[in-house]
Image (cartoon, one colour):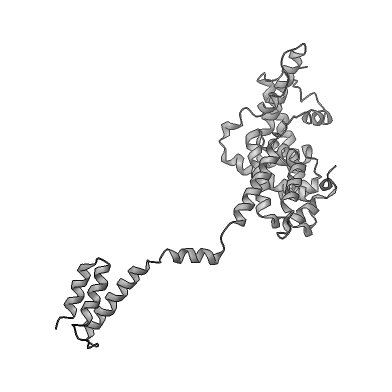
Length: 121
Length: 200
């Protein structure tokens, strides 16, 4: 037995007409606004993005160390090097007191003793 | 009537693409307001779900905003035709990520808008069932057949334009359309057999 369904009884044209009854809901009324606002935020983020130069500067800043530490490190390197190769012939009586003053100011007494050892005759 | 209504889509797009122009966001806003409903409907016809459709439309517009050079007017394609392609592809991507059972309830968003109660409640209920069955049948189609049907039948694109959107030849598009309609008839009959529809 041939079953008669709704679409079987319809011509092609009638079926097309039926297809066109398909309904679609309306978009939410705030959808446009949300899209426009998000685009503005994206544009602001893009505009405030730092340039390559400033990002490089910020990166190098991370390796910066305070000036007092520079002085300390430089002093140790210089005087340890001088003591090791024996180039400078400065009387121990003059040199160590200056070093002691500097190291005392930085509270690094352990380092002061080390420098003193180097210049022991 | 605001000035931007007089301006064509392609002129608005040119303003958006010129990064030096101060008013490019206003041009974008005009384009969005002009076309949101149309592309929401296109996305809905692919996804069958309001939430997904909103996401698709928003993503499509923002994709264009962040990379406006994606549209090349010199190729002679209308902006809307090109944007249909963006929306259709995004909708297909979204649907591929979804699990199959999430297609159930397709058409429920439309049903929710229908009035209930009153003297014509039986007619309305019959309409509900028909719409639900129709939507379920369409959502059950393979992606490309569904896209072909949506673009030609519901969005009003010509066969040539729809073929461009889908990236196929016109003959291939016509074949997709034919198979879509045949498939729909078959699925519709099945839905009717299950008693999901009332005869008139």
